Length: 308
Image (cartoon, rainbow, N blue to C red):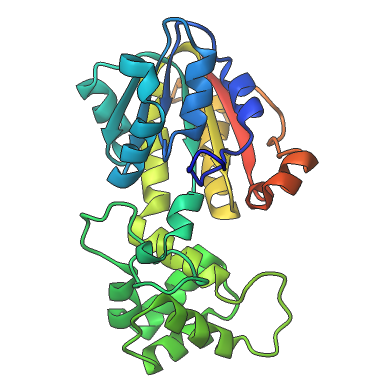
């Protein structure tokens, strides 16, 4: 991008349409990053609209503030994990809102910064923390976890079919200090296997998810969204892999249905009513034009619900 920012936001038009962004509305970008989506929402909600940008990565928040400083008090920021979205909104007195966006996964800027340790294509420390102030790093997991726990994590969070062989190689190869050292070890294990993606892709994904407790945070954040959305407010979630998608689909299905009685119950006794209505029957995928312009968008899927 010519303005010096690396991140290209995904499905901007679809997000604006999905959130029904209108002038004067209040919106939350729960994964604001460098502010790509937030900028588009801010433009669409003027005059009088405001956006609260949340991110666990303080450096991303700093970049976002720089990018959107022209919007003044219309753009608020909070350094924090969206697992605490309810608390953050309460502290900022920013609720109820007309829309909440979760753009999950990792930003291009984080991936391209070797020092952050997210990429198997760049030399860097085994870090992978969204929030650099937290203690657990990928180095800790790779070098201290048992072979059994490593294999279980790589399978559960990376859906890696060779998780056991990779875990065995990691334990035997300790200490593993850099991203490229880790990638080389994994590539050795996968030698001869025909793969559509780089052999280290799934293991790096698993480590990143484990370091940042991404799935647990997602469940916690979604569970608080109902309380911050105004009636008629929209939730939009962009997922990039099946583990995220399963959680989002289960959450929306539950909120559309309302009832939480066990499946074997013949009649509903919980009395719980639906809190959201379905907006689109199927997940929305990026256009072929967008995938051509931004190949990283190809796995993105957008799901939307509306607060009743």
